[in-house]
Image (cartoon, rainbow, N blue to C red; front, side):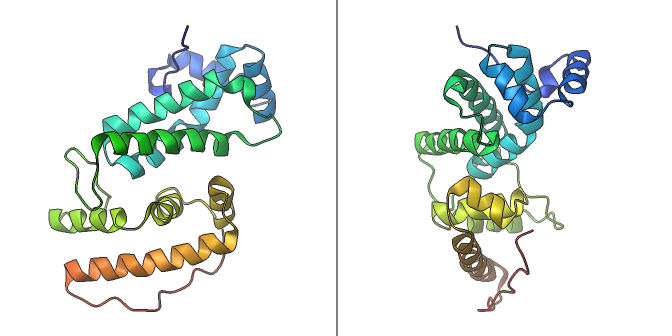
Length: 211
C-alpha cells in the first residue's frame, strides 16, 4: 500500500517537535538507514528538512502553487517507495532532485507549456515593483532559455545554491555551470532590455566565487 507523506504543515505540531528533537542527534545517513530498515516515522525528519527547498524548486519549473505543492509531495512519496535502492553513501537531496525535476518536466509536458507563456495562478517574483507587466516580463525572460540554462538559473538565483552544489545536482562540471550562468544572465538582460526599453550590456559582471 502506498505510504502517504505529508508536508510539515500537515504534521501534528507535537510530533514534528518530537521527531526533530530526536533525530537532530543523528546524521542524515543514520536517519535514512532507519528509513531503509522500515522506520516510517524517521522519514518525517527528511521531509521536514527538504520540503521547502523541494517546493520552491518545483515552483521555479511550473510557476503554479498547487502544481508545485503536488509535485514536491509526490517527489517525497516516490523517493520513499524507492528508498531500498538508495545508496546510503550518497547525499539524499541530489537523488531527490532528479525525481523532483522529472516530475516537474512531466507536468510541463502534460500542460503543453510553451516557452514564454505566462500562467494563470502563477506566483510571481517578489520584485520591488508591483507593476504587472514587469512581473510578466521577468517570467517570460526566465522561461526563454533552454532547459539546461533555466535549470541552472533557478538553482542559483531562486535557491541560492553554490556553483559546486549546482554541479553536484546537475552532474555538470563547475566550469560549465559558471559559463552557462554568465551566458544565461546576458540573455536575460537582453530580453528584459527589450521590455524595459534599454539595451543590455554585453559584458555582465562575473560573480567572484562559487559560494
